[in-house]
Length: 357
Image (cartoon, helix red, strand yellow):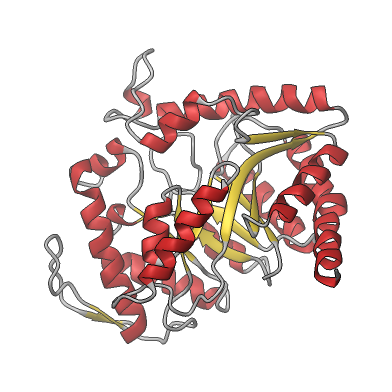
């Protein structure tokens, strides 16, 4: 499988920009990313705070579907318990049709307790609700009919979708952060830093076992994507890039911290809520450069880094978190253009040489 590059974004709100300005800038940015060889766009879902100006991923992705032609559109993730099962089924099927089959599905429970409370259920039910809705969603996609039969949480008249979804049996599934869930589900996997050999081996072991069991998900995906997602900054010097990256990452982490807990950010005081999600807590405790949550440097350094990562053969997909925090348009564009002109071509060349050897 050829190595591909994707972009991950929360579409954060900062600098007093209007939603109209943010949307127009991002769509133009992603058109350029598609033109430059990026494979997919991954969009996070959050509600009620400045981490996300696109709380309804389906709406933004539907708009992006009409502005692009090849870019895969991947909500990462759809926080399933925050959605009515029928509505999320209909919305995603529409995006699949509007994009001519370019939708893929990152699914999960969401990581923010107050968001679950906002949508009327205790955070403790989130995991079970997520599994329940995913079961209904996949069954609905395969049959055209979504039903609440057997659900402990939902009761509704079954609904027959009035059109056939484009992708069958359903779009490829993704899991972010949790290798156990991804491997057991047979999902494509995203991890927010460099993936270790041990983690890749664990994924492969779990996925191989899962494919022998009834109810295996993603049976139509024969070569799963194993993605490492990292913030990236390219600048004229290594020192400048690291300075930009540290400042932007600190801003991003502060926003992430405010997005947790049981109280919405606009009601919080000075004290930052305790991070209850283990992955987010772990990210906050790490040095962004030592643990490769962020990669920063000149274009030569970033090019060499990704060529080496490709040669490692652990990840087969690289996701660039761009922009992040309060990164400026100029900083984000400089990094994007470096990938288009230097990094992606260098990885492609290294792949070709390895294949020919």
